[in-house]
Image (tube, rainbow, N blue to C red; front, side, top):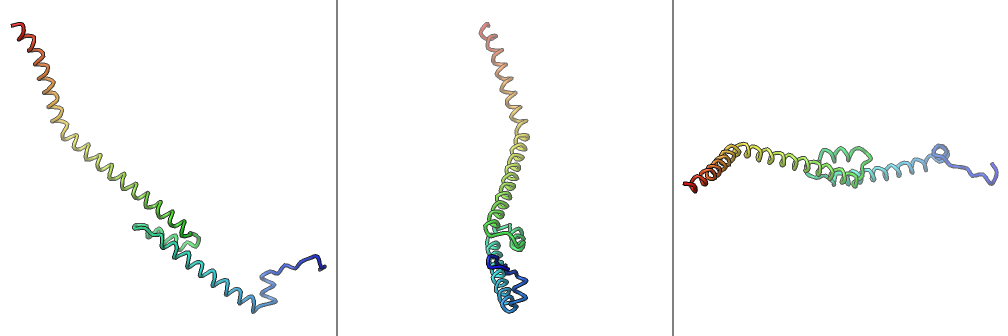
Length: 132
């Protein structure tokens, strides 16, 4: 190898030529990684909203979801659940209104028909009274 070429040190070279240093670095990196993973899991679990515990628990242990992503997904899940609940409430209210309309409609129709018949009778009686 001439002076212009550089030697690249690989993990294999380090392990072979400097076993003690390799072991020390490996343990340090593993500890750093484990601490980062614990922090990630805590950050994800902290995002749980009521009713989304299962989702957040699943995200916490998938090994990739960040706290911010968990917050977004948990909020999205809550909004979807609220939207579904609102739609169910609106459908229930509509059903109640329609049921009430069906119950009230016959009386309303009858009253309206009676008013119209009465008005027509008054109209037909009025000219006859004036001519007599």
